[in-house]
Amino acid sequence: MTDILKESFKYLFLSTLATVLLAPIMISLLYKFNQVSGIKKTKLGSGNGTNSIFMRIMKTTQTNGTPNMGGIIIWIVVPLITYIFVPMFPQLQALLIGFILFGFWGLVDVVVFTNGFKNSPQIKAMQETFEWRVGKLLFTTLLNIGVMYLLYSTGTFSTLSLIGTISIAITPTILILLSIFSQLAMYSGEITDGLDGLMVGIFIIIVCSMSILLIIQQQYDFLPFLGIVLGVLLVDLYFNIPPARFWNGGPGAMPLAFSMFFVGLVTNNLIPYLFMSSITWLIMSSSAIQMLSMKFFNKRIFRIAPIHHHFQAIGWPQYKITMRFWLFTLFACILGIFIGII
Image (cartoon, rainbow, N blue to C red):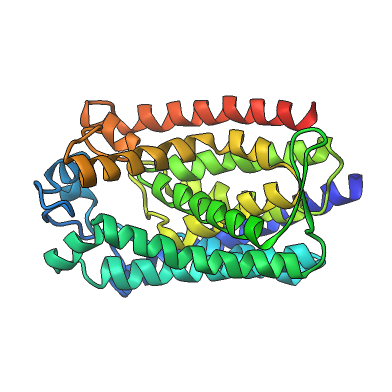
């Protein structure tokens, strides 16, 4: 155990150093290629009203022009250092393929659909519609099915163990259900990236908690990977202190959320993972509830969704929302660790 912990800390320091060196270069390149936010007034996807509340709470007069795909540093540094320095095994290979794949999709999503059409109110309104979001969800679910099948084909994932002695054989139906679950986990992470430092702080707590749980359980295989992730996130959080130097967006949020789901899945810690990441699922649920209510009943449940923006709309400052969500995550992670060891 001592040796693997030493290796994990070594990789943590290495990823921290690499991110410190690369972050300023990445920020300058994002400015150079105009990969920055440009939120403008548009009609809502429901056709009822505009995004004026969102523009107000996001203070777009101050924040427009902030690089909005800084998560590429997560997407690049984590798999690169892992591949070069960490001994490979089948499950880790599947994890890295999924990490790279979903980071690339997040990159395309931001570059093409967000930044590419930021001057087109019609396209922006379309991207807010229920149908557009469901379409994206279906596409990424297909990608998840491919990654889950790749994991299954390694021969190391034939059963799924839950609390106690409950064990489920992996069948094609179960594989599809896990793929849908994985996609929802990714979306929950992406939609959490809405306030300065919110997503990064939450995932730092989750990564640390999952590492503690795996050490207690004497499951050491993924500790080097988690150490690399933690090193990148520590630097990322530094640049996300308000006012953020960049926002992460899909290139960082999607692979990050996927990787934590994946680690929880293959280490038989799916239930503890759900507790640890519960705030991201709550945030995603608030957005889904709002969309469904607006689509079928033309009625708002929240002033604006997801729920962290609702709190902004009723007057909470960003730092209060962020820190309270961090505290919620910490408590949920303590519960997750407890459930994982009983």
